[in-house]
Image (tube, rainbow, N blue to C red; front, side):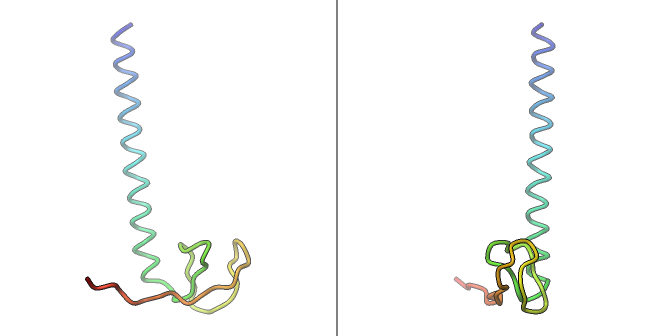
Length: 73
């Protein structure tokens, strides 16, 4: 009984660690691609970027120009 409980706990931890790593990587990749893409974005969906002004396809809000300046400290 103890052996199966320990195996279950280890498997749960291993799967949890794998999932969190993938999520962090996906977020980092989406941030990197957002910086490279178009200069218009939705304020509610900053992961979406476009080359031309218009409306967000998800919520219909007007796209705004992204701030491309970097804060230098």
